[in-house]
Length: 327
Image 1: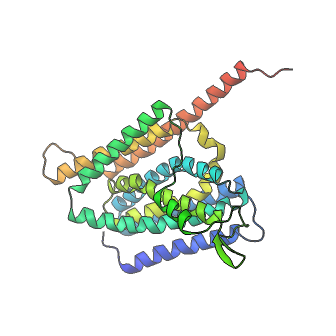
Image 2: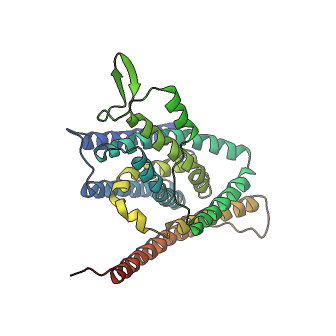
């Protein structure tokens, strides 16, 4: 699908307007915590916005491209749920006041969106010139899927390790010991310093970019269209901040989510390799249609989420039986 420049400008401009309105509404007046009710409204709004965009694609360029968008959006959104575990760890490690967490996430996600845009452009250009990269992407996704399952079986805890970007920021800029409201920089004794607010924003943005090493190859396994790849990523990232507050402690109950994500990555990895073989005129290699991918991804997330919640309820009942309340 050849997308005119005006369409890119319209979509990016529209997304920026929505994000600006979001930030203005949330940040009016004194800093305050992001309520569950507020988060629920915004998550619903962004999901409906993504659905409307998909329907717009359906009516203008056909069901195939719309299917690719929905498959990519659901995949990116699903992978983002796993990323939220790391965001919780980052917020705890930097002791970010709850009233400022929504702003940290928004700025960090905006940084990630800009960096992902560059990543997508480079990836699309590379895949167009070097078709053998589909084998590399497929193998990488299979490796990632196996690694996720192995770590989960070992019971390894999610942890946050400072990346090279964050370490450079710490060395390059003098930092205050404590937060100064929501300010990212402050002048002390005539010297300009950054606050921990900027550090944690960089941590969120750069960490999310690292997550793109999994998610970008995954969505390229569903569509080769850079416009679809970018918009699916953008809509998934836009709703990520509110999802962080809406899920809250529920994330700890999604014990099987890692298996679901591993299965999705493995499925897309196999799909990439099969499509590369099919393009190389290997007769036995099938071409998996987008409706099959969309069905597999959707069913996997529903099954793993429901199974996780059932297990959490069973464990809670066992805990009540083991430690009955003393009257």
